[in-house]
Image 1: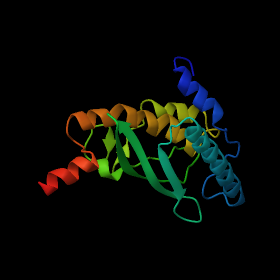
Image 2: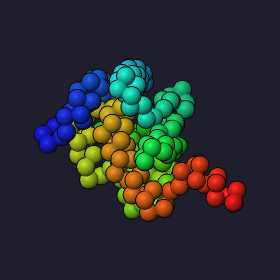
Image 3: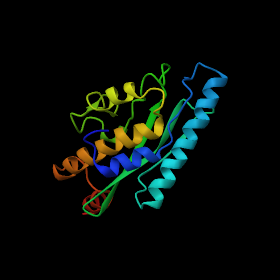
Image 4: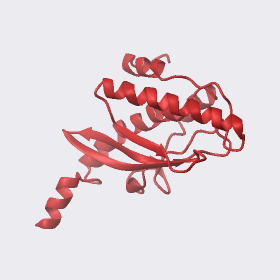
Length: 174
């Protein structure tokens, strides 16, 4: 955590670490891991709300907990930009981090792979590998998606690649 800003350090230390090293194919151990994931996500969400920094909603889309969907948003110039968020838990999880997808932004930035998967290879993947199995979904959102949104959304808005929903409806009505 050397070189990190104090706010990121503080946030990260408040997200519970996970202890069970299990993936979707590990039966009862995966159920235990999934419970830890939920506890960590709940703690992170509550912390964000108490700090007036609520920026995502996700839930498991299937009973196995291997497909997750939701929404994330970023406020820029006092306007809220909202995006669909989805990801699958890899078979090799937690050794492999989930690939977070923002399908609406597919092809709008070079820091994205086909299908709207955000690029996390250079900065986040080594951190994930070093902290396996202690990191989970909440950590991927905090250290992967949040900084990606903060870096990319202002550029995409300023370049006109994405428009605020109110701007889009106004221009179509004209």
